[in-house]
Length: 251
Length: 244
Image 1: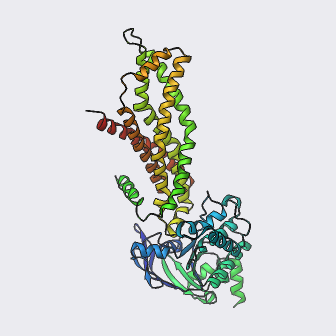
Image 2: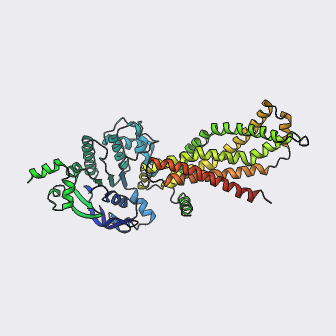
Image 3: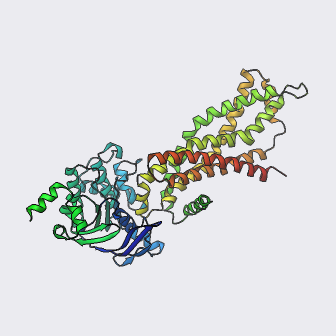
């Protein structure tokens, strides 16, 4: 479980996150949603430690990440897996080397065991027989799946995804969403996904935190979102024609 | 000044919380191969011509019948060992290796590969930069030795082919009044230049912000700042080690 308490972050004079709190539970797909520029990616980067919050607490199963000493921070970081927006695969390594990388650097596992684990993860993300292909030789959707395999290969307890569907067609997006939900349930990990894709929200959102203008305006589940009563959230959710039709059909 | 401060902090991070030794071994060998072997051809071509041109121009300028031809060999030798081999090669090194380091790290930064390392709990500065600096400091002196040997050989070829000086005179000049400290001085300079080029270029690349345009700008800046640092440190080292 990850608890975020009163998180505030500014860049110069501009406050990007203001007093945001939320709880991301284990075994659930937790979504941070909001319009572009609302601060959701900044929130994610604060949670994983790429930015330091101005104030507030981030608790990983009770361990405060913000003020932790270096060793505790390293321990927590080694339980984290992250899928970046562009995949962030290492260009100079093939698929197998990319997925094996955390095991090579962070563990003393025998080579056979590492390869077993890599192949299991690649099978899990449905990318068998792509071991020797370079990132430039595979599609965007496949790169995202390699990124997921790499994020989880070291038995991560926390999975963070920054816009996992960006740049993907709707069919591939749904497959990625389903894969994330399946993995979250199977490994009982805490998954936090930043997205503005309404398909993902409706498909896999078990806990949703909505940010607008640097503030948390709403939290709840995908079944509650249609009746939130928050104007900014309604504008976000029902921005496209299809969602407006869904709303009309639901009365 | 703020950049100088950030550069010093950046260097400090190289040794903070490093990964295990075995992690670095393969990386260092890879970098040595990349930095050393990939530069050999360019350094060799430039050095041979540098030596040849130095010989022809020295011969052209020494027209007094009172100065023996063997002095041409002596001038080319000292010029090569003290300045051409370590310093001019360093500028070539900055152009080839420095821009490559900055471009490589800049691309890794803008495609979030460096963030990926940080999230995994890996000290990205130490993991990515330390092997490059170590490889540069180890390999650059070898390149300087090669450059020196080839430049002097280039001078000999010019002496033979262009007949500007007899080969026997040239060889005699090479042995004349030889001061061994010149070689030590050249090697000290090469270690300093290897460190400066790799660390400055890594710093420029590592803190790239933006997109493809900024990666190009970082590479250009890396070469420019490295060249200035080479020339400045060249003067400081000469002042410290040669002036009595």
